Length: 247
Image 1 (tube, rainbow, N blue to C red):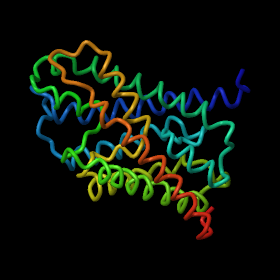
Image 2 (image 1 turned 90 degrees about the vertical axis):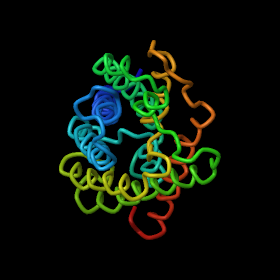
Image 3 (image 1 turned 90 degrees about the horizontal axis):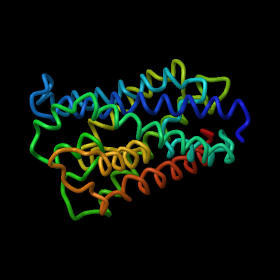
Image 4 (image 1 turned 135 degrees about the horizontal axis):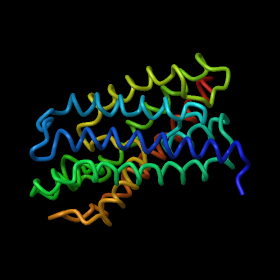
């Protein structure tokens, strides 16, 4: 049994990650699926939408620290700002929340999924795939670098803004929002910048099991990249943060 405070925090991580994916995958669906009023909105809309999606999730889960991302939980644990014993419960909550958010996106846009014949377009509203196939090591580096930047900047802002440095919530939602937008615009063109194992893996599972009309495969050959890359990037950021006195 989880202690009451940890259980409460895990519920917030679940709900915050659900909102993150609902709004984030939602903007992908809105800009990509046929007959959507937002179809063709483009990369800037998607990057802004994901940044605002993170902000919404952080507002919901600020009392838990609003990690919303297994890589952030691991990075903060390595930094000594988060108990290792809490990492697995947080990650499970984030995964279930991301899965649930993806299901809600499908329910919201069901008619538009049915109206979209291209399976790759549908997959792209759930999870990431590389812009150029066949370069997994380069894709891995892209996910590593994007998450490295994310976690390093979280470390930079956290100790300057919070009495409890593990907490990336509250007013921290605003700088994190712009960090996500900046990463998307600058570094996201290679892989679609998952930079979050829960954001990619759990919706990919949802895609695999949902009865989506004319869907393609779920890209399992690539699925390890947006899991391993972010975890390595967050770990490296934590070490660099320690060496440079950010932790």
